[in-house]
Length: 209
Length: 116
Image: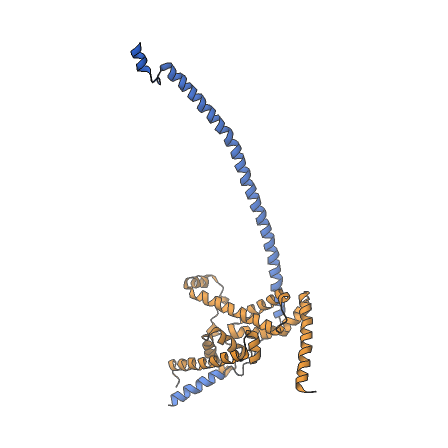
């Protein structure tokens, strides 16, 4: 059997399985929900971690992602795969939290008030935290790279993070971001160029011997 | 020159630092925490619904109390107004009688006096 035929058959079988799972989820089946969570939890968590770089936030947002899936599975149109839809929710929710944090940072007075009254867990310094998957020898470099990724435009950041941290293919990134494949290629290319420039200026400011 | 090469190398190394990234994983209790959160949310929702219902009842009771108080004061205010009118009328009659007896308000008093 040629490889393309095998792939098509595999995709068709997966589609049927997915449709059945969606049907069960719509009917409120707990076992279907558990299966869905177990299948996707690590990928969702890793995606959130790539954007948020904070285990508490990543856990919190991952839970919100599955709550959203639980609530709106009835609205899910099967024009994208279930995992693409879940990734989309994970990205949206992570970006929402980042935007919220930025707004909070801008309002210095309220931030000071919040720091006084919030629990210490809310104030984990992103710079101090490192993605758990980073090798020890690369920790410092990865920290610098993550800081520079944060300075990219939102679209470049999403495309680069999904491709680099989550390891999605360009086509998968295009599906999640609902843009064309050339657009993703262009975004990632520009992200890499910008990162190079930013890193050059970073190392210029922090001279290396 | 050496510094520039170092910098270039460092940039490249930094860009490659996420190449061998191991995916972050949740622990085995993620599902339990998620279901607990879902249950709490549902309890919270019912609690909120209960609170909203109670709040609505209190609001309706407050409005009814206000309306009844207004009605009571209206009922009490109306007879008082009639009484005042009666009192005013009696006072006017008495004043007229009094002025008539002393002819205080007789505008033709001096004319009448001259004629006399």
